[in-house]
Image (cartoon, rainbow, N blue to C red; front, top):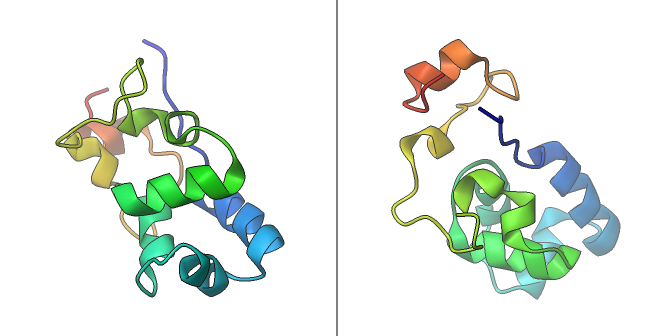
Length: 105
């Protein structure tokens, strides 16, 4: 089984900060709620996903392949495994953590 890895949230933050100066400016530019960008980089948040994809000129399915089907359609509802890792967990998750989070190993 091929392990699908989403873009690392810190890499995405760095790209957005280079382009907008701060996540707050990015949120303002795209009409997002305060602090929503930080949440959306780590957990499924469709509005943030669309804004990040547009801002970085890449398909959201390329940035977060675990959140999208092969045809580019967003999973709805999102698989339970997409709500992990919680704060302080290693990135990417170990197979044991993925199994615990409902993603199987």
